[in-house]
Amino acid sequence: MRVVPAWLTLVGSVFFLFVALAFIFLVARGCIATQESTQIRKYVTGADSLLSDSSELGNGQLQPALEQAGGDAGKVDREVLSRVADRSEDLYLRALENDEVPPEFDGAHHYLVSALGIRARATARLEAAAGGGNFQPALTDAVESFRISDGIVRNHYLPAVGEALQEAGHGRDRVYLEEPEPFMDYGEIGFDAGAGSSVPARDDPNALHGVEIVSVTVAGQPLYPGGNVVLTGSDEPVFSVTVANGGEVPETAVPVEVILNTQAERQARNVTIERIEPGGGQATVEVSGFRPGELNETAEVTVEAGPVKYEDYTQNNTLTGTVTFGM
Image 1 (spheres, one colour):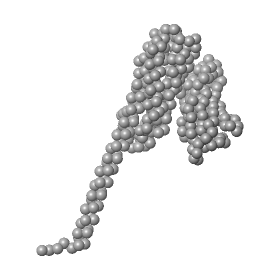
Image 2 (cartoon, rainbow, N blue to C red; image 1 turned 120 degrees about the vertical axis):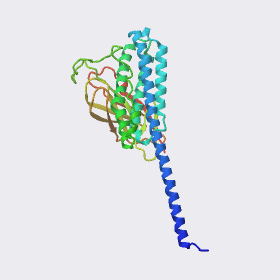
Image 3 (cartoon, rainbow, N blue to C red; image 1 turned 90 degrees about the vertical axis):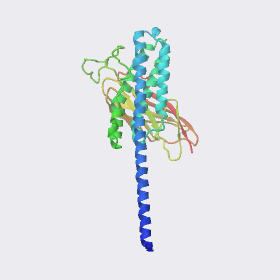
């Protein structure tokens, strides 16, 4: 009986092991690719669902209620306003608390959260003003905010998602990316600003002027109205402030001020945004140079953008919160 040489047995074993490892690698790689593709599609379709639900709230519920009221606060269906405000807050929180955002979409997701957050705040303020004498100004401000949110979705979120898909090698998944309807048909409720008219001049006092704080982060962590950010380790109190222009004309030299009130001192730092385009355009600036507070100290923070010239409504120009200096 012929005996197979030991070296040949060894070579055969090594070859078999190599083939087995290559097979396992290819299978694992395929599974990872499939899982990644599934996660990306899940995110894109999930975000599309959030925006579609939000648009349905505006077009299907809020707009008919406002049309029926005809601008009369006393005729507004407060139950509808409450339902829209609650649902808008729910959609915002779902986007904000989504912990399954693929890394490729971190930047785009920020715009989604901002747009839904603006709608949630605007509908909440509108609900609070219903039945009172300040409903009309609140409605004007809400419409301005809704337009800003539309611009964020159209001009920033959708392009960012498309770019992320392309960079991730999933350009074919653009078929899952659909542009949602605007939050409302503003012409139907009498807010068809400037339709068919010439573009207003930058210094036109009759044009719509208004800026709004969209988001604030401290050391990369989001600071929400009335919220708190805990800084730990090497975190520094560096503020990133995003401001949107909901007006009809570009705004230039927009001031941004951040005030940090520690126990030791009041620190105020100012920067200027050179230009923000109209119709929902955004600009982000960084404000730094703050001295940290004492260990475990919680300091009050005030962030203010603008006001710009001829801006009538400034309640959305300020965001307040706190920063805690931890270990």
